[in-house]
Image 1 (tube, rainbow, N blue to C red):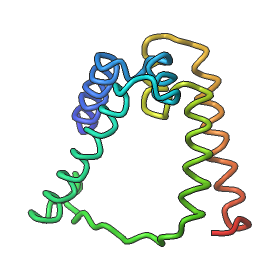
Image 2 (image 1 turned 90 degrees about the vertical axis):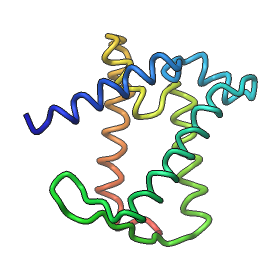
Image 3 (image 1 turned 120 degrees about the vertical axis):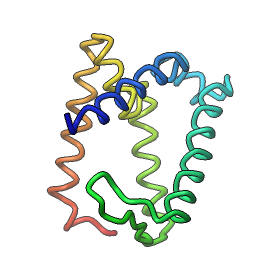
Image 4 (image 1 turned 30 degrees about the vertical axis):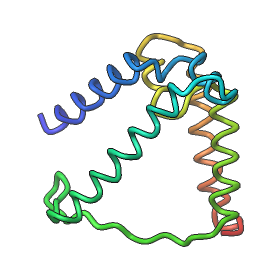
Length: 137
């Protein structure tokens, strides 16, 4: 019963992603070719909602589902870190035609070849975890 709210949130996320066509390979390619504003509008809406959510969390000192206070830790601000990470993420997104959230929505639609992309993402995350201490940060 504890996981029900997370399952319902995931279902709602999948519905929103599919109805907004954010899982469409064609929509994503339009975005990377600067042919359509559609995806930029979706991303911009998500950024604005994220800013509002963080503001409300800080203003009302909200807590997580276990009752612990939600805290935001400042991160190191270095240009190369975000530039290289963003380029790698963007290249993967452009090549696959989906970012991590829509990968699983596509899997829910039974697009089985997307399992290759999910495996690649998990393998890349694991590889980063193994090599993290040896990489410049």
